[in-house]
Image 1 (spheres, rainbow, N blue to C red):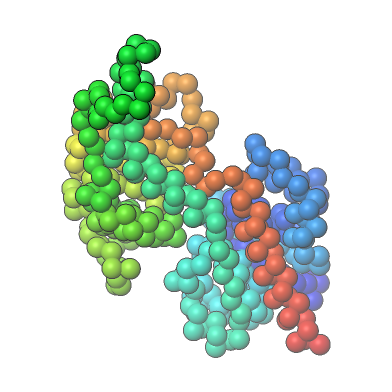
Image 2 (cartoon, rainbow, N blue to C red):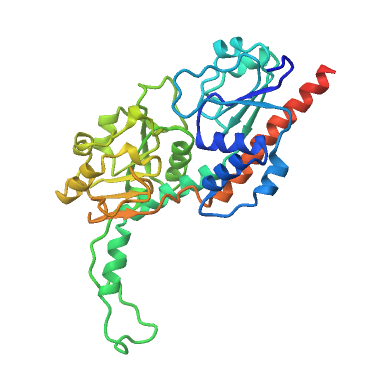
Length: 355
């Protein structure tokens, strides 16, 4: 590779970063195929995306998915990151680094002071898809707490013969259903206070809920938005609803197993819009069957599409949505183009300075 090559490094494999890298590479058979798969089942104008997002004359450095041997190219001029910890040690390893492009607005994964000392510019990309995901999580929490599917089904069954209801009449709670919980009287536990977890917590507090949170990486050294930190077991014991917001790593596979579910209150609900592998679905179905858990509301699954023999399909008191929490895939085109714009502007400015 020539010495003057401009290297843009994506030091972590992530589906959004992989898509952004393909947009920056420009139109090729392979990039088109991967982006069509990324946006499916929606049809996106890829020609327009490439026209606006392609960055010529760069070499993209990115690990293969699950590559433990990957090392960042020391010639990297730009880092494009989502969860990577960009600390002083990493910055010191990259003498040519001029810009850090972050997918998301949280700064706690970047040593901002160390970057400033080196004159490294920073750019943070807002993520509307995460706002949509947080909305969906709150929707599922509320629907599960109020037992919305049961109310819907009961209403359809408890009708009366046509013509027996007086026009304009009212009949409060005519099926005599029992009530679920209101959000303002509930305690909701958030496991993982990353970008989505924090957005969910803020929405829940606006509804008047008491919000607890925990981290799987040990007790934090800071307070967050006045939220109440509790160890995991205490959070499970205290929460009317538990919402998962942690990465789908192998370390977290089946975090929610039989033992986890038994620590929850039997009248609690479980919500997951993060990754399906976090939950042992057979254990969840069994807990619901045994009335050891009130209900669950899920948008993600261990296998997608959900197989016909999934135990969740026959489980009562489960709300299922088909991995749509993030809204339309096309919503992400803005994020991809914002990443490209930030990288392009940084490189253009750097070249002007170099002259």
